[in-house]
Image (cartoon, rainbow, N blue to C red; front, side, top):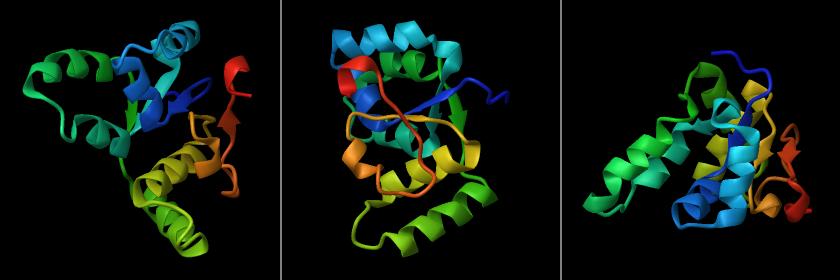
Length: 130
């Protein structure tokens, strides 16, 4: 998978879009889905607890993204993050941060405070999120 120019999206970005947030949808459209990526944990979190009626629409949406699976490098970086920031970070966020670092992609999140303290994470900040 070509990584140049991709932006990794946090789970909250996906949730906001699926709930009809027009500002998020405009930003995703502006970036273009060919430039958007997700961590495997974001895909899992998106489907967790979903109503059966939402699955088809969500699957179509998720399939537009490049998805990074957990490989050895991401897993090892995840462990580093968990040990370095124990008590400061949740497991899903640590996996997302590890994915962003190991793929060298900026992270588009609506909760920068969950990631801005992690060494190596670069945040993507649209004009309205500054």
